[in-house]
Image (cartoon, rainbow, N blue to C red):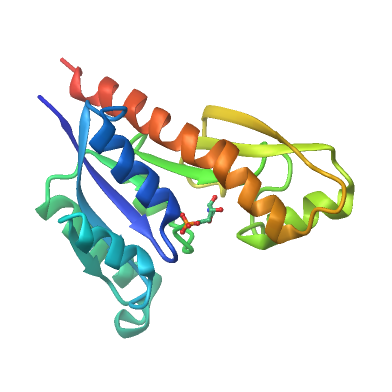
Length: 202
Ligand code: GRF
């Protein structure tokens, strides 16, 4: 395979998606190409980012499909139709069942805004992660990229980067620093690493 085909699953602003698009343009990602973006939120700005970059963008509605099972079936169908090799969860706010994760074993990666195993698992998403870190009073936090399995934030770790907590930080200022100093750096690098492995499979 020349390049792995990458799908990015999103729900929100899509700054991590943007970091991936920029990394492909600059050559940091060269073993894969982002060919599909899927959002479970119609209003996600990430969809606009995809369109601006000329990447096929789809909205799949969990509400209209009623059940998690039907939603995941629709997701799988789109991923298979588009011959996707690697799935990147970049701010995707939906927990995937074992039926889904087992089907794409070591083919799904996620970015989580803490140093796993701290502040992770069920209920730790978005600003809540940074609120918990500040409440605990940790002096260092960061981000983790990991493979996705049936345990929320429980799959094999691919990369981590530490970020200092500063006096006076709010969840918002900490979130921003973790994104700028960790997420937007280690996610593209990890995507290249895994895409390279997939593209060079015998
Ligand atoms: C990031 O903090 C990511 O780690 C978390 O959700 C946020 C998504 O932000 N899982 P964005 O949509 O990439 O801007």
